[in-house]
Amino acid sequence: MTHRILPATTLLAGLCTALPADAQGVVEEALGGPVIICTGAVTWTEGEAASELQVEPLRLAVRESRDAAEIALFLSAEDFVAEDVWTCKDGICMSSAAAGPNATLNVMQLEPFLELPDGEAIYRMEAVFMVVSANESPMTTEGAHGQGAFFCEKPLPSGLVAAER
Image (tube, rainbow, N blue to C red):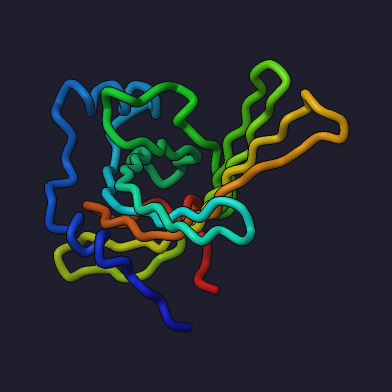
């Protein structure tokens, strides 16, 4: 299987993955302990016939524990909210929420790409974000599909990572 690493991710890998201490504290509190921080970029397409690609930098954090079962996906600590924490099981992470007549369902999968000699690791990520609008009949859906990669300061706990396909 051939893997591609986005050029933007390679650029981000050269940046410091650490968050400022106060910002990291907010993420650690939400996840229940010390965290592993990963920096990356995701290329998004909206809809099935999307012609425009959007590249966005993102961070993720996981509790530094073998039994970690949650992952936080965010851009900056200032933007971090409790809804940014996704539940994971067997390498599939998801979040869902309902607000008024709309509901969201987000699914993400990380798979190992490369472990570096200094203990850092790179993971490939694929995600689907869906919004269901029940305000109309029949209900409508809109979605975005994203692919990218994350550069992590340490390997992630195995329960958060899917086996390579």
